[in-house]
Image (cartoon, rainbow, N blue to C red; front, side):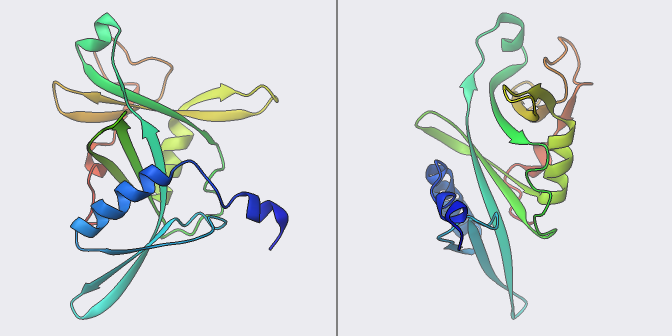
Length: 181
């Protein structure tokens, strides 16, 4: 292994991975952890279905949720989160990989785990707000918000949600607690 690969072994998402393990276990999977995160796989899930063993590879991402504090946002959203991704973050990822995106208010996890096939997650990243980096590159600012009126989750495709509609947001509610994979 190269030195660069070994440096990638440690990361700050251990909290999210632990939550994801419990969630998957409670939904009938047997999760195994990987030691090195060099191939975008944090967990390998094993499940017996109809007498056959099925394995699923998962990359876990963790995001902090923040309570909404702006006046007109409060009318729609209870909380939101954002995370930056490289535009080609999952370019070489296996097509059968899943992203488990764990979101939590500080010390207050409420079951907000989104399980998204990597190809769909790539599309969401491409649709997210673009942000210029200090080094002259571009990243995707992946912003997600909870609409408490409809109990729906949206990924923002513009720098702000419009006051009265979600035409600049993608509904990702179907991925929340998507343990059917």
